Length: 187
Image (cartoon, rainbow, N blue to C red; front, side, top):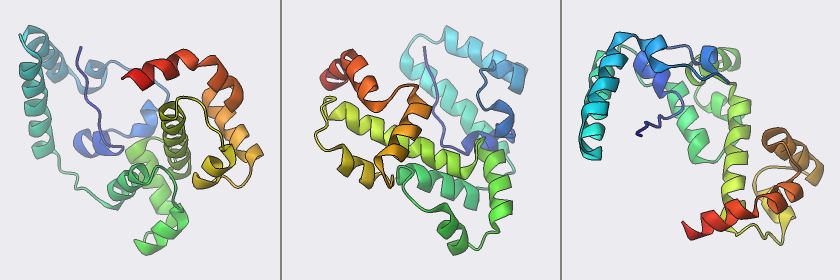
């Protein structure tokens, strides 16, 4: 098995696909990109080593990048910055600094990333927070400090958002995922 992890706006920049059409969906890549992906799949399956598979994918993606007529733009920059800052940054201030109309930026972000910038920052914050919880071996002594560091103003805001993303309250999640914590601390 082999996979490719793209930066948030890369699929749109490389392939020109409006990402909002693919949010919360699992779609076979050949249904979207056509026969070139079917041929790519065959090549990857026939490769004998992982290095050969990686080389085949790199070659395919390099050709697609060269063929792409879409430049790296402010939306790509901001999406990558959100990831880099773990979702802990004010979007409205960034759009002002980059001289971007907020409404136009939101439309572009939705097209390039598939979700709104605000929702993407929430995903980034929650992802980073879960990584911290896992690294701390699931025994966090000072929840309030972590909550504050991630831009939550109070515990109820954090609990509501955590429950929305994870499907459980934080304490229940930590208690019921000890096995995952044990696995992660060994890795």
